[in-house]
Length: 411
Image (cartoon, rainbow, N blue to C red; front, side, top):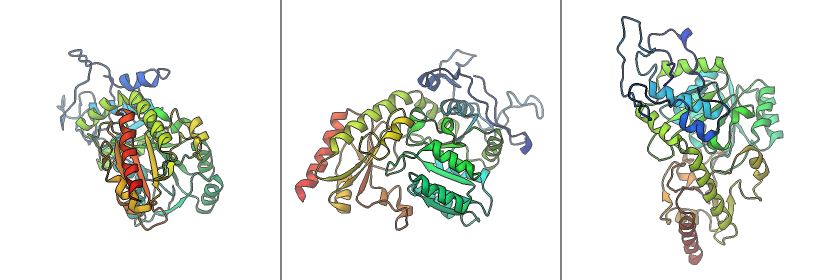
C-alpha cells in the first residue's frame, strides 16, 4: 500500500503538508476507485484487505529515523492514510483528512480559515449541529454569523455584499428540508467577494455529486452517514483542492489531534467499497416512497428532489447522479400527528443519524435540530425526516402507509 504519512509529533509546523492524492487512475469508474484507491494488497502476505494498524506508536531505526515516516499515531497511521487517499480520489481533491466525527472535521476546517473579526454566511436550514458549532463556539471567539436562503441567489448576493464573509457554507440537499442549492453559481458568488466556499456533501455523498468539480473550495462529510453506511462507526472528513489550505488543516489535524482511530478508519473504508451500489438502492427506494406518499390525506407535503414538483428538481437532475435516500414529510394533522407518526412505524426505527442500510425516522425539531428550536432556523414542527434504507421497498412503503393510515383513521 503506497502511503505517505502526515507529519509526526516531532515535526515542525513548516513540514506539514497534504496527504497525497489517490494513486488510482483518475479516469477509472467511481465504483472501481471506491474499491481500489489506497487499498493495494498487503505485500508481505498478499492479503487482499490491508490490515488495521492498531498501534499508538512505531519503532524507530535510530533517533529521528522513522520507518516509512511513521512515529506516533496522532501524526500518522497507515490505516487512516489509506482512508484519506480514498476520500481524495472519490471527491476529486488534492488532499483529504479524516477526523473522529463530522463536527471535529468542521471545527478543524473553520479553525484553519477563521480568525476573530471574520464573518461566516450559512444556509438558513443547515444541520443544527453545524450552526451550533459556529454560533456557540466561534461567535464567542469573535467570529460573526448570518444565515440566508441559499436557493435565492439574489438574497445570497446581497448578503455577501453586505457582510464580506470569509466563509460561505452550504448544504445541498439541505437538512432536513431537502432544498437544492446551485453549487457552481454559489461558488462564483462566494469567490467574487473573496470567500472560501464550503459544501457539506453528507446527504449526497461523493457518489451523487462532487462539489470541488463545481467550484467549491472544500467539502466536509460526516463519514458516519453514507460513507460508513452501516451505523457502526463515527467519523468526519475534510477534502480540499488547495495545497495552502491543506497544509493548515493537516497541521491542525496533527496539532489538535481529533483524528479517527485506526479501527474507525478501517470500518469507513469497508463501507465505502459498497457506496455506489448502496446509494443507488437508497435513491431508488426513496423515489418510490416519495411518489407513493404524494397525495396521501395524512401528508401535506413531500420534500424530495426526485419529484418533478420539487422546486430544485431540475437543478438536482443536472447537479446530481440521482436524488439520494433522504426525504421529509409534513403531516396534515400538524405537530401532534408528526410526533405520533414518528413513533408508530416499525421498519423505520426512531433514531438519530442517517445513511445506514437500515431505515430510520426522526422528528428534527426535537432531535437533530433541537439546538435551533425557537430561532429563525427552527424546523417546522409538523415535519418528519426519513432516512430510507436498502430494505425491500414494498415493505418500507407498507410500513409508512400503515402508520399514516392509522393517523388518518384517528382524525
